[in-house]
Image (cartoon, rainbow, N blue to C red; front, side, top):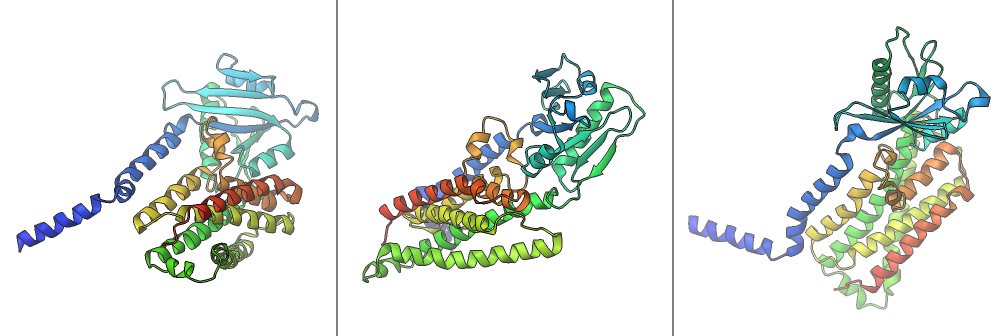
Length: 369
């Protein structure tokens, strides 16, 4: 019996290693993701933390206050036209906290907070009534506050306690940042798993070859899958928004026409990507690996749970053109900023272009048997 068991195990190993794709998704993909995530999150304490500084004097709103320049020290700062300041605290690598102060008006700070460009803002004077404004539910904002307050107290001993004023206004909360991102992820998953994976299963079950034997046109067959999932995806989004509206009081101040445009363009983009992913896949291991390869980096980098502005500056331009980033940013601009069609039209055109190119390539190289 032991000999039979040994030969069966050996035969399974041989079958496994005969498929290069299966070997890659089992061994290479986890190592690749560990490398990408390690680069993205290494030395997180040294990331540049953006902080807005609001002046109570309208005449000096474009300039950083004098007390901030004195407290940080000119030697350890990088000053740009007295409206921006970079300050590094701590000497050893890995333990530094780096802050980027920007002089802003109150309205500009609110808009930057909604877009995830800043974590918090400060106002007032440290000797009288210094105030921190941020959402306590945002873990990154809380960490920035603790690091900044600790750095200020190390620079100069003071008995004056800084005041923390939570931001609980609808539109400025962390949940207002999170829900549009979750809606974007829902659209992505509905397409890549609902369309891409179902087409892969049809190929594995030998059902696609039956389709090409009928007079049915191939684009019409693929379009039927897309429209079916689009209706289901719209239902999922309505359910998610309904829950967020009744439980968290999330509203949509922007244009409903713009929201419909963004939904259709985002769905078009990811439906095209799903067709391209599924065009040549011949087994479930490769299909699962390809879908995860597309979804995982965007899920992490596109600013769903936290702002992508926390990543190094060199990666930000690449992150901003990812389909999930375009979709999430457009949804946030409508839900938190009240954007209309004109504001989201460039992103919508970009998403439609991505979907059209991917659909054309997928249809060109599609394996129907």
